[in-house]
Length: 353
Image (cartoon, rainbow, N blue to C red):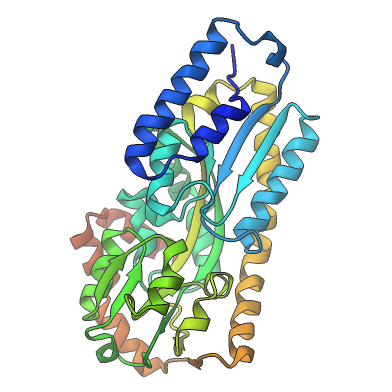
């Protein structure tokens, strides 16, 4: 079995790709050229070069996901004794939100940790508001058979799902107070590319806007967006609290990630290397999930101390209005999510918040 490696020129060309057209045209051409060169045995000097795994993600290196990616790099490189090199590209350095999945499928990048929203289909169940009463309820789902079955379903799309990484519950920020459902009327709110999240904003009377995370700060600053939803740690790391006047601690939805790889690439790795990488990833996953809640708690305190915006925690009565408007069961049936999956989650985790 042969594992192909990209030369420096080929990697640089791949990094220059932008958007789907660039990925399809330039990256496929580069990959084809690399395969052709190696299959002809024209570079025997590189035969012992390390296997390169490019790990791309869209948040900063100082978040739980960013730290976990670096932990995986450290463990993998040490345990394979230099046979594998992990190149981590945080904060959309290689690809933005909507580009990275196409890049993975084409083999232009080997590993990602996208939010579950980006995986679509039944993974959008995790976007349903007020479905999980706490972090433990979410973990019970992803650590059990339901979580494993969802990861396995990705294989039909040429993707291998390896792990779930936590982030936490989301908050809303805006340029005006968001206390009741009526306060959302007419606002342009950024969400991830998810039918469920778009429907959520429609039900709240807002205009949903789907855009890459890396672009949100500028859009909020120049007024193209009025608000957004995300976890406190992502709000701070992207400096979104500097261009908003209000934050509502709604904890209305849970944001998490799946660590995924290009299945063809992964299956062609030497079994011993693959086993070592999976062991390193298990440790990096435990690390990521052990710090996620604390990172968000610290980030929310940092936001409060900054004095840059007003922080509001809704009352139970106010949240009751939100829940009635954003009923997860009704939203699931309208978003193409399996009703049986929603029922199974409810059964496994207990009553919603």
